[in-house]
Image (tube, rainbow, N blue to C red; front, top):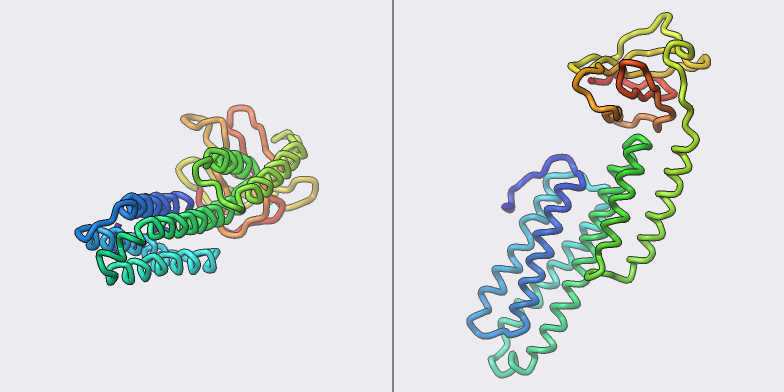
Length: 264
């Protein structure tokens, strides 16, 4: 990554890449700080300066749902840079006396940075998760819970709170899935006056009537497709309400209100 890298629209994957870079740099700083010598001064500066480009890439190339989280992250990076600047100006004697204190401060700043990166990652993941259909949201929640459970080495004060929120969300999603209704494609849907909203290589999206309500249904070609429905969400669509199981077709999904033009 470079300072002018512009990331694609904000997703969990780019943020995970940024987190890996930042945490790796912090780890390197800790290692150097444990046994600092005069010749390590430039190495310290290089490592700290390396923190900034990927963070700036996020700031310049994406629209964050949590600008406060990024502001705190950048503030922490600046604290590290300022600390190293003052550290480089001390004498060799003072530097030797302060070695342990310096290492402790590096560790503390590293822990803060770790927590801010985790908060930003989680915020991005939840923002993306909220736009998915119910079945995908549950799968992603399970992944987020698994990730948090694996973070034994980087537990922070808010770890328990985050886990509690994720577990509650997962329970809510499972409850929503149990309320889905399976309907008969040929008996329950009225295609009279149906219009096509969008079409593509895998099928088409058209309007139909279900129990008197206007819904949008996506027809998927059976050949070459898995038996799970590709994601339908585009923009601010209402939550997925049901699944359609059709003989000879892949599973379809529909929304209770007519969505805008969709591409398949």
